[in-house]
Each structure stands twice: as structure tokens, then as C-alpha cells.
Length: 106
Image (tube, rainbow, N blue to C red; front, side):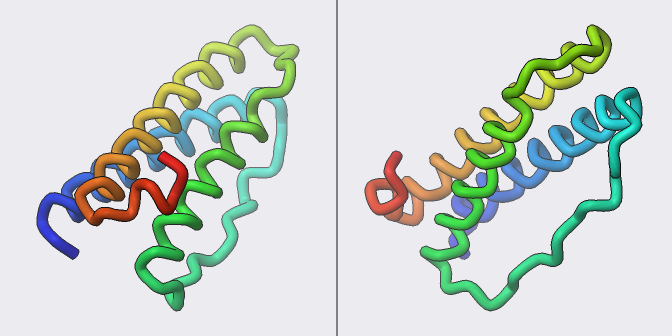
């Protein structure tokens, strides 16, 4: 990848990891399974990798949008939303730099 694309994807990766940490904290409070980590598909073409990242981030955001009963978990969920949105923004910047943004619906 080009350096500017890589830099933005690394920023997205940091935000994704931060979102996962927040979601895991909330899951511990709700006594939910923390082991659900699917394997990474490394065989995707470049454009397909970007599309998969965007799809997974949007799906993760939708998954945590449900009503939260635990007030402490609500705050962690709010922070997770922020990290997911920042990851989407970083992927958008990377896709723009890679000239794939219009194909990905940004």
C-alpha cells in the first residue's frame, strides 16, 4: 500500500482495537461471551478488503445499537461508537487516498 493509505489503515486498526476493548468491558459487566473472534480472511483482493472492513464496521455499530440495561455498559458502548466512527473515518480517508471511496459508498 501507499504510505498515506497505510497510515490511515493503521489509524483505523487502532480505533478498532480500542472499540473492541470497550465492547469487551461492557460484555464483562453483562457476563457475555468474549471469545467470539472470527479468523481474518487474508485472501481478499484490495478493493474487497476495503469493502469488508467497511461492512464489518457498520455491522459492529448496528450490533451494539440495541438498548442497554446496564448504565455502566452504556458509557463504554458510547465510547465504542466513537472508536467505530473514527475507524470508519480513517478507512474513508484511506479509500479516498486509494481512489476507492466512491466504489465503497463514501
